[in-house]
Image 1 (cartoon, helix red, strand yellow):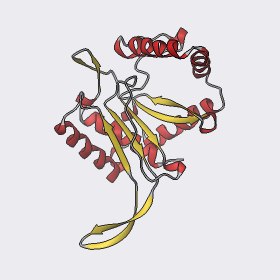
Image 2 (tube, rainbow, N blue to C red; image 1 turned 90 degrees about the vertical axis):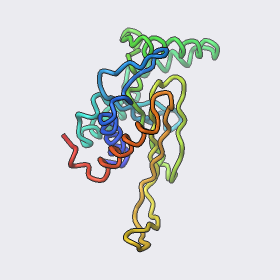
Image 3 (cartoon, rainbow, N blue to C red; image 1 turned 135 degrees about the horizontal axis):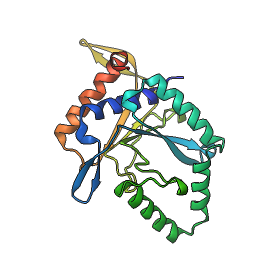
Image 4 (spheres, rainbow, N blue to C red; image 1 turned 90 degrees about the horizontal axis):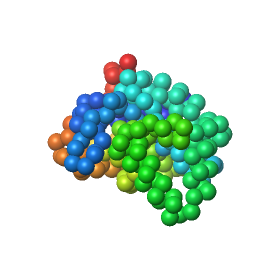
Length: 216
């Protein structure tokens, strides 16, 4: 079941591959290249009352259909409570008092993002949010929105996909009605400047205009 969100995520992977300067993590005043292009898809769990997500590794090397299949399988496990690592982490976080919770989050970000450590015994993995994030409000019937970047993500780009709606467009000098997919992007200016954004936007549009041309 392929959706606009899957295509937008695949387009993000394509644009990061076209602009490698986006695929870095920040450590002090250094930009350290990441080993792969991984896209994190935000997923609603607990009946929509909570959020988690699935990181699809090497998204630039997978087809949109393969990404859709992987997300479907892993998101179902999250929603059904069959993901042992997510369940363990969530239970631990819920038991911590608020002051300790903030400290725990800071320590987690420092270990997994800044030091790039992998600690499976604590259900903590390096680079947990990947190279960029995708979220969607289209399934809620919302036409558009803006997603905020948070300090714990350590990513340069967060893309939000809205609901496809019909809108009047000017095409060849005529006003016509077409289905339009609203997409908004939030960028961290510490990673990129205007030149990088223009190159990334070109690659993003290039993929969405003709996805099959770039599928592996």
